[in-house]
Image (cartoon, rainbow, N blue to C red):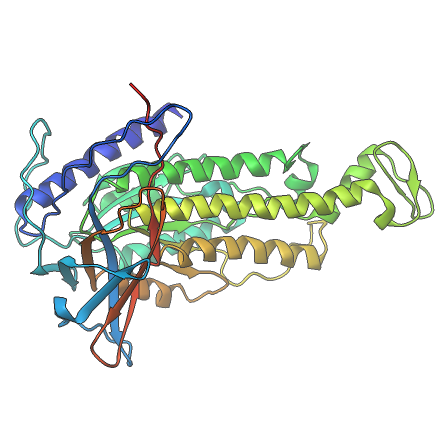
Length: 437
């Protein structure tokens, strides 16, 4: 744990130095206006506080043939926040990984007291930033070979010379590679990656808490908290498309409820003639009459709500940091459970669907792409490569003065015909309590 905290600290320092170097050496640096003076209110009236800052969002424009449109002018874009038209003050074009500035915000001077990294050659300005999030706590050990083959494809097809990348794992793979341009570090990480996810038998034999399988919740908490730490560091970088390649089997807070209930009954004692036995030892002829079954159904509903809440908070944080999640399930096409697993086909399919849906939510709500239930990783990596190489970064100063409106909806349109655009759906402000002096 100490090692991961140190890695996050170094990662934050490197990311911040990249931000300052980009702003001080390029005419497209982002200028932040001074924050508004906070209002002092009585302690019993907490409120939200926000400053006037540049809001940026990535925009991908393609024609009807799917080709990127690289000649759009600032006047051809219309951006709306909560249905109110905004004044565009910045439009950066990244084409083939190269940056152009049709409309740039004012230059921000370098900050004193920050040590900059060694200067890079001027012709090496790809501007692509990748974070590889290896959630080995939710990756099958049996798929370790498949997982390493996936990273070989990533090394060959996605990460190119001049790209900056870092790698963090959540479990015993113990990978914590700071942001670097050295592709050899990616080769080193491949040899260390190993899945350590829970097997169905591990879940059935594990302990149960008030929220269900305790180990399942604990591992998900570790994964989400690690992702939150990364997003906090990435929020310091502006005017670049930040892509988090999220490699995981996904999440289900209430897996195999029927099989878990049956395993628990076998441990506690089972009634004769097919009758079920509740926690108190009382026998029930029908499973519907068993209060433990009713509790299991209620627990399943709570588990879905808890998972939705966790995913929503993570996607809000990602949108605030302007980070896109590209989720990859290395299992590919998922078939039936292994023969040595004691779960029925229906519950297995429910588990697979829920875990894959969690990855879809992370990608869809942050403007990324979910690679799930597919063995064609080559096609997926080519798409990720294209979306991280050709795009616009559009910026405006929000004219919405209401600090209590945390969630802001964004809509981007273009006036040119036969051009389709994708842009972030919205963002959320951080909530802070103002303390009285």
